[in-house]
Image 1 (cartoon, rainbow, N blue to C red):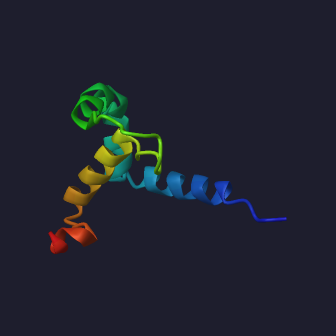
Image 2: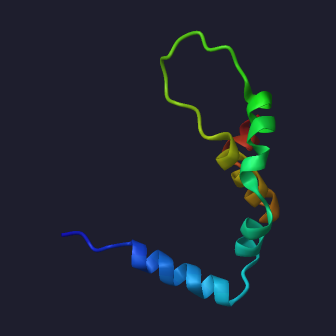
Length: 81
């Protein structure tokens, strides 16, 4: 039987919450789903077929871009452009 990961995540979240972690506060303040209609309009593409993998959720990509800017991280492929 595999050990449960959920209690570890719950404990970690509680510790971060006690420390008034910035990301937890940001998540409480910002209503991320309100950005979905705008982000989906930007991303609209005509699909030629249903082949290939499903696209990554637009809100998740938005969150990742914000985290990237907050922590000054660059995407690995940006250097190749």
